[in-house]
Length: 298
Length: 298
Image (cartoon, rainbow over all chains, first blue to last red; front, side, top):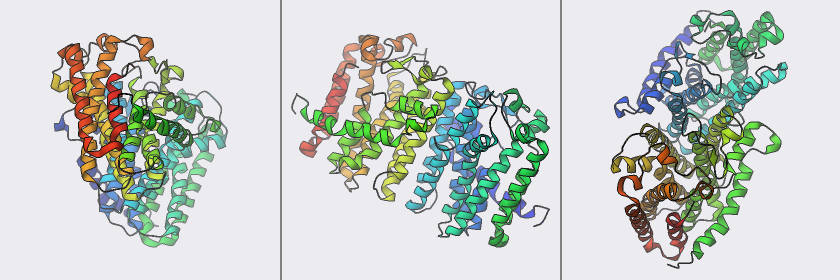
């Protein structure tokens, strides 16, 4: 693998402008004027690393599909991610004031608007999958099913609940991994699965490999998040640094130490990359995305 | 039409036990033990008039379908309704302490749990439509599409936003009707549409009639809600009476008077009933449900 991450650069170039345009078309126009539409756009168009959409575009490409086929699921997973950030940032939840270097949605607007903007981003994700793009109905259903199961009470939302209940308590490493698998890992894996389904091919081996790739990358991503929270300053992160310690949360560094955390993330990254080794050059963007996830500094 | 509402009684008898059982199976078991699962069950199994599910069962039956075919969409529309009540009751929104005579979800649990329970009920509605029951994929997609469009930024959530922004302001009658159409009417109409789709027949005339029936019933329902808010006591309503006046909200009685409001609701009800006159005896439960909506006292 090239160390210059050129394949990943290529994925970014072809994907991220498409994603902005897709989200821009799909979200209500500001001329429709309501405060709610503005808050939705504020929450979803505010930048971010766009890792989940990149995973969708990368998986669709690896499955032989076109960027056009990846547009709808890429936008849908990002809308689910955006909705979860808006709600998680609320005063009753994590009570965060900063997100991506900007005021969080309830700070820029107000709590009621933020709750509703999260709700409408949430609905919009499923509306896109049910209505946009050119897919067979069974493809749409496969994408909706995997996204629901990753986001709901057996996935992301359950992870957020566990995360809040764990504040101030010492967790076991197993409980911490379970929480992160639910809160972050399942949506990351679903991004790869939706990207696969969007290509409308039948290759169970690839689906299985993408699932294992996603599970490893998702955990590596979260370990790196924990590491960044204690090693970086707020202005580099774009969100308050040190918030895990402030909330007395168990983290990988607090349970196994910083160096072991770094080794674990590297090993998971290597495992993820190896999972896709058999799929040739078209796997390179996803493999480099895995590298980026543990090399990133925000 | 019989004045004894016997056909509606029959619809209730065949439908409501099915609905409770369907929701009971679909919601996470309490033995799974999490606080989040309990809060979801608390919010969705707490009774209520179940008007939207009854509309689904009635529409499926009118379209020649079975109660089994109505189970999944009936549960899905009720989950969307339940999620919206949980979020609308939050302190940052309508700040209500009572719902169906019981503490609201954030009072029984806490705000964070209520936000997440609303979110997971929301996701679960789409998961049911994507996974449960025996439907063609295009039927599932039609149900999901209509439910998303009724619930999202062009429907229920937009209506709630308009409702909050209108507090303390004098509204025109047209603006009030628009707000209620979005906030309540669209989900009521979608309930009838989903019931139609669940039967998997092709009868556009019936779909069109059910849509017009729903639009009329939805507005009549809301006018009756406004009337009850000023004429009934809190213990009869199961939620705080007089809350519209307390929040300085425009209502039908405040804009056109109590007697004109009653006449308007009756006329809408008669219009709705007439819409289904051509469909014979199988329309009777829905027609009696329309009568019930303006005759109810809670």
